[in-house]
Amino acid sequence: MAGPARGRHYSRMPLHIRTYHDLTEPDRSGLGEQIAAQRRRLADRLAVVGRLLVVMSGKGGVGKSFVTANLARALARDGQAVGVLDADLNGPTVARLLDATDARLVSQDDGVLPATGADGVRLVSMAQLLADGQPLAFKGPAAESFVWRGAAEAGALRELLADIAWGTLDVLLLDLPPGMQRFLELCDLLPAPPAVLTVTIPTPESRDAVRRAMRAAVERGSPLVGIVENMVGGEFRGTAGDDLAVEFSTPVLARIPWHPTPDTWHLLATRL
Amino acid sequence: MKFLCVECDRQMTFEERQLPGDGTLAAAFRCPKCGRAVALLTNPMETQLVSSLGVKIGGTTVPAEPLQTIRGMVATGRDDAFTDGQSDEPAPSAARGTVGLSWSTEAQERLSRVPGFVRGMVKKIYADYAKERGIGEITPAVMDAARADLGLEGM
Image (cartoon, rainbow over all chains, first blue to last red; front, side, top):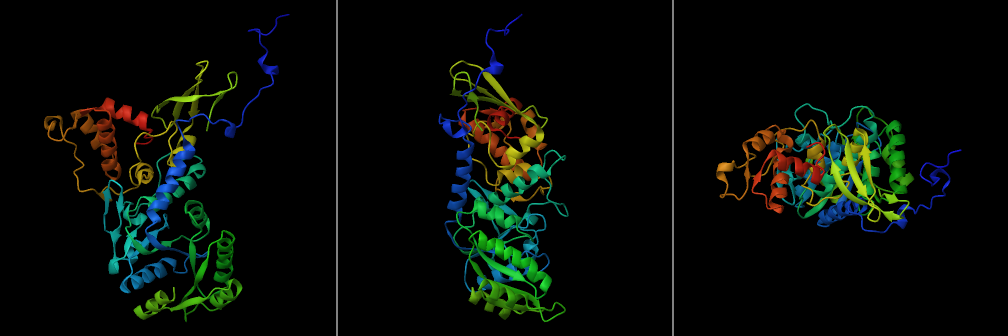
């Protein structure tokens, strides 16, 4: 009867395998260090931003981008240096709201300069990067693209935060898409949980959706700055703003009518 | 991601990265004690996932360009999204000596096929790669070497 072909019986040999963290020899790939370098670059870039404020809602169609753009303009008219990052990568609208759809981005060695929109607001939006009418599509295998598409979008968000040379800003507003995914990505990317300005409309349906988003924000440690109740005085009826304010002990900073004036936005800007 | 030579109980070291051009990636690692080599082979989906993170197996020798992941991965970018104040047209070989770096006709032709959305960045990456290594003329062979050395998947 023949024994092991090479005189050693590998299949029965107990393997002593050190764990990942046991291996401490220099690693040329340094994937962990590459990730750490990305984080440092992002933190350094945002170090000259006085205040970072996320505009979010768990509900679509409540006017987050509209509020973001007009709030940014009001802050800029009040003399503040304001930037807006349109974090809605798949449905970007901030560039149009700030009259900067055709503004090109200037690439420099250490960063990309943002465009300048209405009232001097600096902005970057995926709308400036995509061909007219085209969706955000990535190169790569189409099959099972859900496996990597989320990582690609998070990577794009990281670069928009870390590689845009905003310069010194008093306020950087981040306009988020509906839902919570982008907010959770932000929490993973930023050095600290971002402050949140919540937008809702008066209806109970909006209240229920926004409540979940606010709860998630609280659970991640984000300070709630306040609530903006949008589209007030029309067909959308309810008490979502007040209900959420009581539940989360945060103020209703503004109730935006269907036809707001510059004074409406100025008032909101002064209450932030 | 690390590789251990179980027999020697030594961490294997990265040796070489290859991009066959079909979306896959091959990375070779070797045991510093016994010399045994293994290859990590990733399928297109796995390659894409690594690229999406903005990291490179085997490390990187030059800093990432601003928005490199976006410019390298977005398939629907507009050609004129970026301006850099420089021409995207590389200096031809005849101009060598005036700018210190030239491009062969074949390399220029190849660069012209790169979509405008990413061309300016790709040109700079190749130029920086050549300058770092004292290369005076960029040729398709230099471009291929840069792609493999720098892990420029998809460019």
